[in-house]
Amino acid sequence: MKRITIEPISRIEGHGKITIHLNDEGHVAGAEFHVTQIRGFEKFTEGRPFYEMPGITARICGICPISHLLASSKACDAIMAVRIPPTARKLRELVHCAQIVQSHALSFFYLSAPDFLLGMSSNPARRNVMGVIADYPELARDGIELRKFGLQVVEGLAEERVHNSWIVPGGVAKALAASVRERILSELPAAKAIIERTIPLFKRALDNYKEEIAVFGSFPTMYAGLVDAKGNAQFYEGNLRFRAASGEIVQDQIAAEDYKQWIGEASLRESYLKAPYFVPQGFPAGVYRVGPLGRINAADGCGTPAADAELREFRERFGTVANSAFLYHYARLIEIVYALERIEALLNDPQILDAHVRATAAVNALEGVGMIEAPRGTLIHHYKVNEEGAITWANLIVATGHNNLAIGRSVQQVAEHYVDGAKLNEGMLNHVSAVVRAYDPCLSCSTHADGSLAMRIQLLNAEGALLDEIAN
Image (cartoon, rainbow, N blue to C red; front, side, top):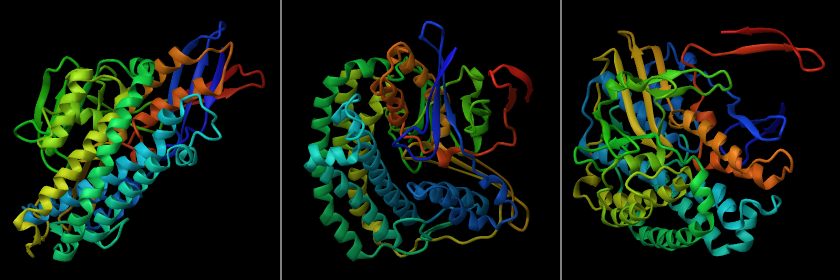
């Protein structure tokens, strides 16, 4: 038995590696996706006042801190048992849409474009963002400008681009200024023009990747995402829906406080990343996927005209439920269209400049759950407090975690298709890494302990023979 290790997986957030096991004939006998870091936010926040949780948990990630601020604040809203002012809700959604734009732009233009624009097996010295800038300067410039737009919207509302203190329990800290509203509206047409240029380019590129579409995590699973009462996708509000690969809605309108009835969490021996699963199907059979592809598969539509038009074309080409992880890239572009349309609609809402943006209260409930859609998928913050409002227990299910089982299966599928132990080359190994990048994992975000850890410690001799083992 031989072993190939890909470490680190490049162009992702966080630290991970892949192990590919080859049999004596050089064929893939197995493959594993490892997340090699762990965070302790659930434990070291114990004893802190609940109202500090948004600011603390936002430090989990520098790419999508808005997501943690929102999920945490929603959990705190539930502890205070308040209904936040309508304008605060709209402003929260507005800043969230801006974050979705900048995060998806980072994934598409910076991290994944080198693969599908320059070629999966192209020279690795050039297969990076600098190579994209050299060969596709206008596209690279568009990526920079689109991400800049999203970040500047965040900065305009929250006065800080990263780790702001504007999103708070009970709403937001400050109303939107009319001058900021007008500036964002004036910059919106340029952002829309960028995505209108990018989507046709990617559609043309898809014709070169029919093989990858066929084997990049192409297997039936369930998909999950937040939807409203009409079945339209939601980023900030809504309840959770699970849809089967057949198109059947398996479970619908799951409220945040009921998530534990449907989502279980297992520990894996090969990874510090938890493995959530759909409880009625058990572990490990209850595999589901979240994120951009999960959301557009779970929802009936987006609810905005341009995004719905793109979604119809997507479904005409790949079916009502698309099962290839390669199509996460396509789904991100559709979601950027949707986010920009929502930004425009929210800014044009007459109520958006209202000064009533925060509700205040003390502890009125000893438990609260916040659930939103982060760029990478469903994000859940669950807190318990004592009568004084100090955290006694916390659990976070972060977006990438939901995809853990599916990523592992995808790595196995791609390795079996591309890796030949008799004639290894860098391109075939990059295909294995690329399927992980398709999910755009945020590994430092998602590695959180649930109180148990499946661990195996092995003692090997110099020849690699097993002498002793401890496992739990």
